[in-house]
Length: 196
Image (cartoon, rainbow, N blue to C red; front, side, top):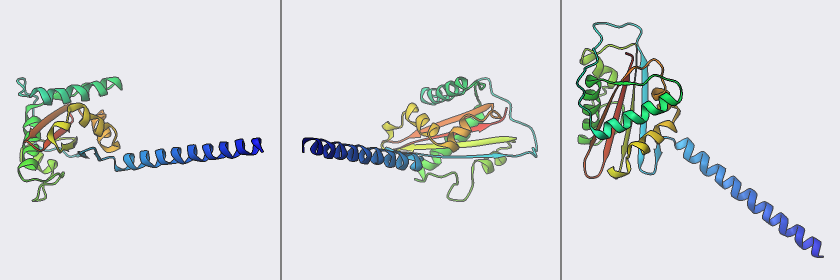
């Protein structure tokens, strides 16, 4: 009788352990499959290759105007790249300006998308600015409330999404623009990547 009670107790404990394990796996899958939204932080990524360049490539500017926050994101991205044997991305003022303009537009007009309300994406904007590329990409992130969007939180969100991680780890990219804009309730960050 005592042995039967112990076996039933073991079966109950084993069943409870299996149920807890399954719940943890399902929760992990739900978080991983959501991928683009975690604890108030949303991310979007896109990339393109253009094998037919026209015009001149924009030279990298020597004097870069980059905020401490933007520099922190750049440093984190370059640390991840270095850990995987990739070259550091160099900041480019034209791409920084485009990134800031993109972030500001999303904040001012309250949207979050690779496409403006008029249907333009970063690749259209490159062409309008006379910037050519062989390979380019864009990662977006925003947070509500603004202060949860730390550089580390955004990098973690990007690296936990295959599309965003692919942009960060793209060996064809050599230059980057990082643009952060915020108001009291929301922070928007745009990173724009391009071949050298």
